[in-house]
Length: 116
Image 1 (cartoon, rainbow, N blue to C red):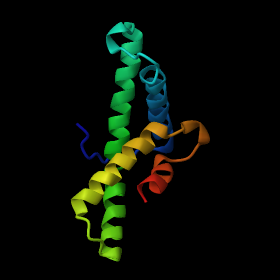
Image 2: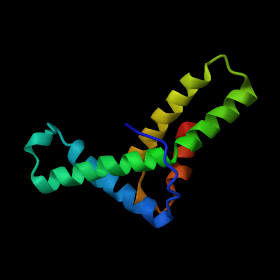
Image 3: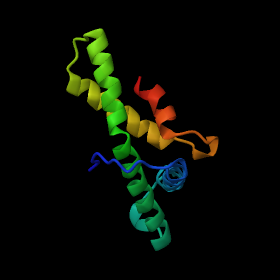
Image 4: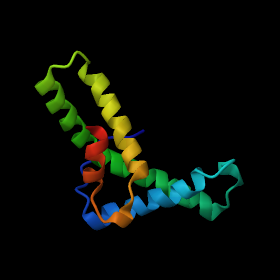
């Protein structure tokens, strides 16, 4: 379960977590992915990737909430705040999965465009 965190990650910490997520995705996106067939080292890398993803998403839930709040307040949309927040968090998770730390930008920059 993803919970809100306030770790104030440095750019270097964020890039390292992004690398772990990318490494995890190399194993989980393979055709016929089966967790049980992985070696112990591969399982550890996959678990580390999922934990890194939880940390990243947990640290940017407030970003998603702020964007939704401003949009909801500004546009007076007919959609409920909670529904918009759920969509924003889904977009944040997708952005975390597609985040490329090799491009040397913050996840918040990458995620902003997916959330809006």
